[in-house]
Image (tube, rainbow, N blue to C red; front, side, top):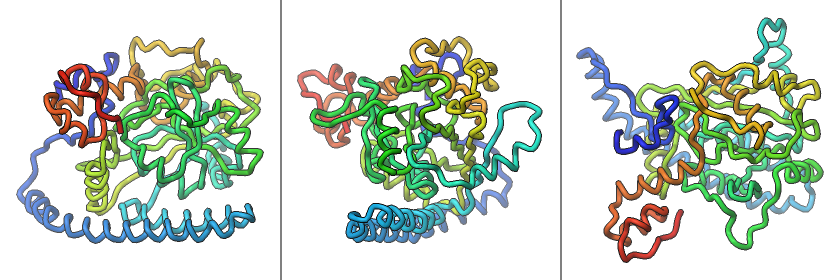
Length: 390
């Protein structure tokens, strides 16, 4: 859409914040009939699966509440929570069409023999407590997959302070596609990421998940990382780092979720996901032998090659965040996604403009109903107060 062209990355031409639109294609008469049938069947399927997902979600909440009885016995509580997460969240993913999730541990070193079997064996081991999982972020499906697979500690990151805080699974789901909070609210305690991961390791709280892009994209590229790893060593051997990339393949409807300003967006997208007969998710994890937490890792090796089609003219802030620059490069090489010059602040500006285009600028009451508006909304709305960002 040309009205959003200012958020098109100059080096690549990619618009990472717009929901993907499938290309128009000519269809045969048989395909047109099949499409017409699907238009009738899919809504029915969506309603049934949406109800089942709601029931499983409610069951998960109730079982989590029951699990509070085991909280005085930390190992038992952790095992109980891990069990219900593995069963119920996996069932939800099946209802959403993710019957099979392809998992692959990859090596970026050329000519490496025998790496596949060792990598696959490594991927089957449970993530240790205090391990840091670094991943791209495109959908609430990412949250569900990580919760099912690792039962991790989710974090919220603040780009203004370069700190994080722990959040629940439900908070992580709600933040997907929402207006990114750049600064922590008053009274909320946050921590430097490295200190937080080490504390989680000491308490045995499970692996920690960080989305260094700070917001969701449409799964076509990688945003510039928030320099949350600033000051870290390369390699950083005091913790274990797992670099992960999630990718969605689709034809008509993309499970990616870039705009989720209120519940109408969330439930509408969830319903369309339920209406799909199947969806495809592939997960790639960099082998731990090539992780920047490995003592033999070299920053020169991590930056030695750029992914195919990398953005031209994008200057990575190596001096500001050398470890982040290494990891975004590794993630790009894993996925073949392009690295962009846009960041989380550009996403906030995009949502400001998105709200103005969809809800107008003359009526503040209309904008307030969305629960979100940005600086441009406030400056363009004459005589109206600035509504709360969602």
